Image (cartoon, rainbow, N blue to C red; front, side):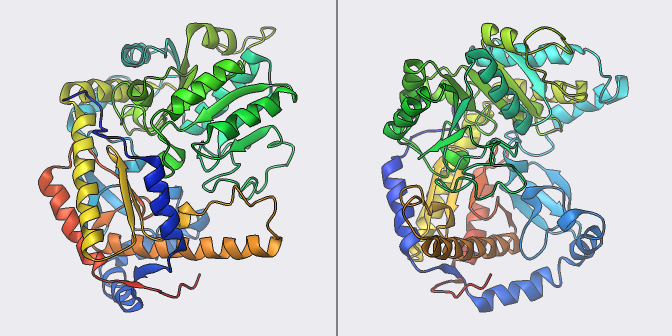
Amino acid sequence: MSNGYSISKWESAASINAELEKLTSQPIWCVSDDALNDLLENYYGKRCQKSKALYDEAKKYIPNGVQHNLAFNFPFPLCFNRAEGAYLYDADGNKYTDFLQAGGPTILGSNYPEVRNEVEKLLRSCGPVTGLFHEAELLLAREINKHMPTVEMFRMLGSGTEAVMAAVRAARLYTKKKNVVKIGGSYHGWSDHMVYAQKVPGSGRLESHGIPARTTSLTREVPPNNLSALENTLRLNFVRGGTACVIVEPVGPESGTRPVDFDYNAGVRALCDKYKTLLIFDEVVTGFRLGLGGAQGYFGVRPDLTIFGKVIAGGYPAAGGIGGSREIINKTLAAGLQSGSKKAYIGGTLAANPLSSLAGYCTIKEIERTNACEKAGLAGDRLADGLKALIKKYGLPFVCFNQGSIVHLECSGAMAFDVSAPIKIVSLLKLLKNKENVMKRKTAMERMGAAYMANGIVTLAGSRLYTSMADTDEIIDEALQKFENVFKTVVKGVEIKE
């Protein structure tokens, strides 16, 4: 039965995690050295020469040659200059099936004409930004509230990272508590207090370079999908002054890379109520991708604050925002500079600009009109089912699963490595050895990503794929043939050199 959500079934977190653990214990399976060398020479060397030249020039002026994390691809970033529906085209004219979808926001497909046309009209009338109030801000906020009733008030910002910063600040101000709890391995942007336990549960400050230890001293992590550990931390924080908020990615850390049980979020909600803590849903990826009601609508759980990003501007720049109850937002967020009032100073000169606001509003209206989330979810199901069949056909230990239009394809097990249990007792030598193993598997993942790209498939780091409404059955089947071309070249026990 149609319900407007992209997820047709919720897979067992225990069974997926068991498969991931099994993959981690396997030797590395990867494209063979011969296959890799062939694509490096004949595809990247011969068919991507403009991209290589542009990248080499960019390195003179831009750190590492690119401005965006998603562009760091092995052996070098390709330069894309055209996007249309389900496809991308690079500077050399090569065509690719786009399963990156700008990191997730373009649920309608890239460069969607109906939204683009409205944006072009706006640009002709007032330009992209005025610095003053525009009707589109109201249209967007009202539309969000229509589909997510918990978001009675909405403040638009420039990015998901800014939205996380705002939500944590608001939670601390509202509760008068300081501690923040996140789920290990989750990604909530790159602000100082959230670059903690990134990617790998239990890793703590492993990636907190340039961030004083004092800054993350009030951030705690708990293992994914573990309500007992969460309650223990909330209980311990109670004697440390209490917990301001628990922040979760509702489908699991890293956009569901580490899945959770269906009733996990309801359990988190109950614990937050018990310990008088605010629950924050990071819906940067899931908001308007899982469905118009977001993950909170799908799971039937009411967060206190919701973080938005990506799709909130329809794939256009300045995509971020924070929403919540009228009481919390009005008590905590300042409207401009309010000296003397005890409200959090939050905002941005280009936040809620007319272009971004109108693009977000038009995108949500089009999602509703076309039932885009459900269509993208069916495409995700077809892609995941096809990949599972190919994995079985070629006897590979790879793991594939999906949460609707968010598809995961784990080939090396790098992200499945979890040090949360032994972190306090292992020796430094063993930890470093494990880290080396993780890095080798990460390199194997990058090699797989390069093979996908050379066969005309754009992914997120070779392990995550986003489907859109533009992905017809024919496009998915065409992509599966490309994946099969890669899987044919995979061998066991490849020696990976970083």
